Length: 259
Image (cartoon, rainbow, N blue to C red; front, side, top):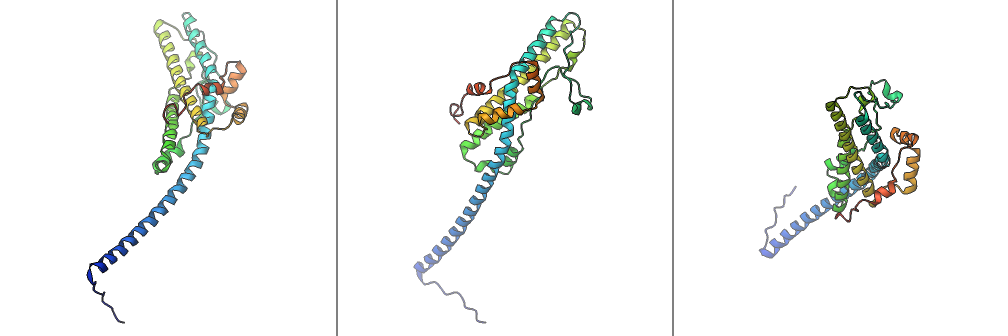
């Protein structure tokens, strides 16, 4: 076997030609790698958008339900405050709301106000943030989705402060201090419910503007078939329900806030 030593370069022109060939080869390799990476992220973004679409549908349903039952829950807060204020030395007990068979065996306290709600899932958004997929979406889309999920976080955090106020179903002795504490608890629960409703209406309005919400017929059908305890109980009691379309129309648009 013969080993051929490299040929010596003759002059700067031949040397520069060699350098040019090497540089072009490196650039081609880097360009190909970049194209492959871009295709990889395009696939991940497309897959992520499909998963987000399913998650946001569940978020939207939870938001619409919260908006619809808000007047019903507020009416119950009003009634509780009036009960506490008008009771004499002993609280006139509020009627406890029966728990489902699924909940009774756990020993949970019976609430006197319907504050049960639907959860807003955020797992897909968290995963896409963690693996960097969100950063490869258009900037405007990132900002809009970020705003929606910030409201979803507010909704979830406020929900942890809901109080079923179960002790108002007992004839508790009332002195000024106890009366004041009861009023304070009712107000704190009302504030938490308000924070959830405010977040919910923002979420639903934004998803509708982005074209990610079901149409009116589908939303109305979902509400008609909804078996959520809060909605069905409000209907049975004849409490007011909100016109969700009117509520959404009152919100500032994403374009108005610069998104």
